[in-house]
Image (cartoon, rainbow, N blue to C red; front, side, top):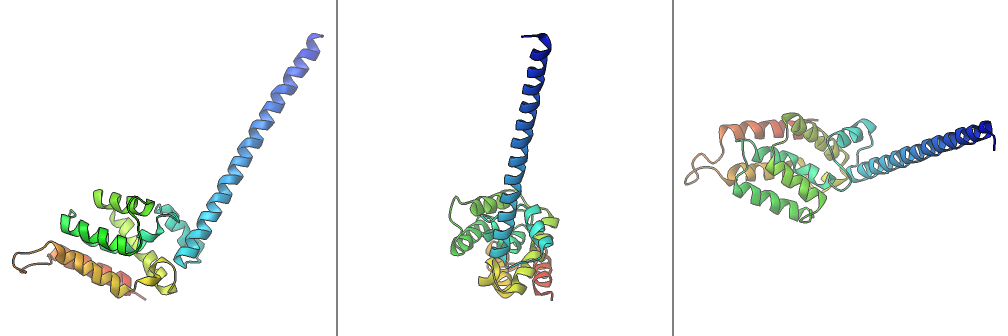
Length: 190
């Protein structure tokens, strides 16, 4: 075999390897895009939200079809963090509410809730999530469809009262009252 033939064969093999690699990358990119589209469709179906911007915001906040069931609990988690930490009584109430809402122990949604109870989400996360909950409540369907703004406020009040005071005096702190007022304003906004 002449040296030129050998180099041509090598160049051809190198090109073929290059294009096989590019094909695999393109197929993987298409697979990821299809999975993202499916996840967005599932989020839309589970939330009742049709606005692509809101679905993208859910995704940006880290919600998936497996964790979206915990979204309506965000204002209640916010209330639990109002005084800078979650007490055992507040934790117990949050877990009880999660189980009542069908969030199974060890599920992705349960792990998300546990993470929020261990590390306080930012004020931005609370505000954006509550705005999305309000939009879900407006649709009357999806994960929030079984809860109303009044239900969420009632649960937030229960969390506020869970650990406070001596003999019922001073049960709800000023921080909790301020947080509750923000939650009420956000959930009742039209």
